[in-house]
Amino acid sequence: MALNFPDPSASPWLGDNGVMYTWVPTSGGGGYWSGAAENLPDTLPSLFVEKAGDNMSGDLTVGTDKIKLEASTGKITTVSTTNADSGKTLVTKDYVTTSSYWIEDAGSLLPKNSSNNVVVGATANKITLDASTGKATSAITVAGDSIQTLATKGYVDNSSGDGQIIINAGTGLTATGENATANQSGNTTRTLAIDRVYTDSLYVNKTGDDMTGNLTIATDKIILGIDGKLTATTFDLESLDALPE
Image 1 (cartoon, rainbow, N blue to C red):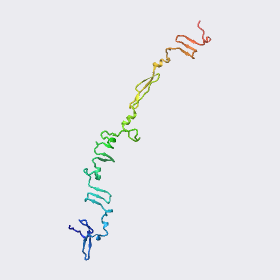
Image 2 (cartoon, one colour; image 1 turned 30 degrees about the vertical axis):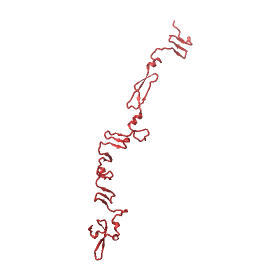
Image 3 (cartoon, helix red, strand yellow; image 1 turned 90 degrees about the horizontal axis):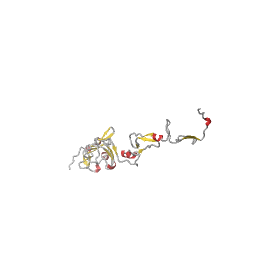
Image 4 (spheres, helix red, strand yellow; image 1 turned 180 degrees about the vertical axis):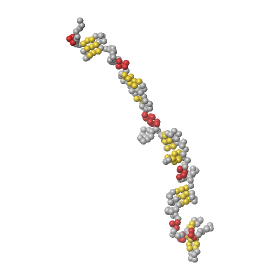
């Protein structure tokens, strides 16, 4: 294969055949291109990257401008990523910021399609942020969960129970209204009142009444009997006023 050698100032020069050529000057001002290793200059390591490892002072480009490793910024740039690229392809910043799934808004990450739900975790044990209802659902809460766990509505409803708060009327009282339940949201009124029928059967009204049994004073000293008689254990005539004539 014929080679088109460049100007001697380009020495050392890598030929199309993969051989490194060096311009070797001769007496009389002439010279020639040599592919012999012994003719390579001592400055060669400063011009090329060593296979065993080296440091580049300039950018490295692949495919003219397709991939660029920038020495000044430490960044890697490539042509824009597309949906058709392999799943192992490293994506560019423009692909992330204009993703078909997410958008960034004021520091928040939002689904690009606002009607999409956000699902975290496996199907059987997941958290769902429902876009249509604005509600979050998760797997059922159990008693052994951490106290920091947000509880589901089912756990709260089942934990509160629906037993009644029962207020019974005791002796001499009557009760009206319903008993309350432990999980109700509204108010319940339960009223207790004196049972007049019961108390009237036990006590004499101050305003006047009829006794069905004897009235005794000082155990048995004076007895007002329901037979119409008054009896007393002692009777002091001197303490009585004189009878009218």
